[in-house]
Length: 284
Image (tube, rainbow, N blue to C red; front, side, top):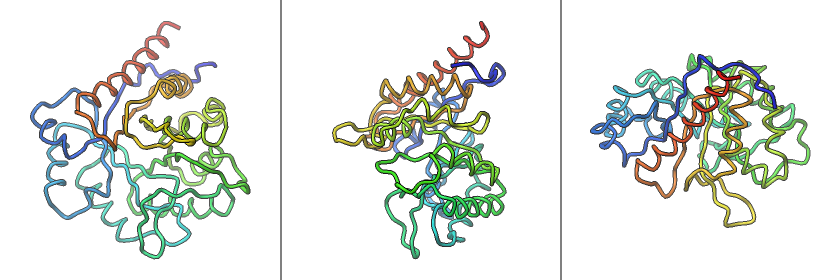
């Protein structure tokens, strides 16, 4: 595999998920981490303790907002109240990235607990593209769209997942959040080559990478974010760096929440991979 472009001037950057159990430790100790990421929906109130803590953390760190309920793939209209709350949060926090998922999760005003898949067809491409454009125009921000973890595929798909994501970028001007763990999980569940998946993604359209752990106790691998990043995912991450260059990378951990130090050590590992790649580029 050839290196696709130079990243010598792109600094290594790694972050972790900010959980409420970390608030006091972060403010008191100010750990050496480049950024924190939070789920947008947890901070959409007009006030309260969580938002106050987030604003306190924002005084010292960059923040990335990661949404789970915008439901950009819905066949219905976007929730204008949700968009308004998200815009208000963006105005208060000034995040350096705003992202959501290639999925849908709302029907008739009811929010479901899962990020549900969409078929990769011309019709769903048009629907999701229109929603992304509407959201970006309203928010005044470019959105990052995350590839999902999948456990099945629609037999009438007209695009591969990388092709569908690329078309979204071309039609809307959005960018991608590449979840490397999701690629690995989906490749096992749906029997495709994760390396070929990376090769299908064009260069320079990725602005963030996610890494996380997954559960292998069942026939399907489950994207549960409940443990350290597995070795195979780290290997795929290195290949992503080789193809795309150094990209801001987040360690997600949403279940079996560990001590903050464990999460920080995972982020340091990601940053070391980035530095190693940068040193290799300089020596080449």
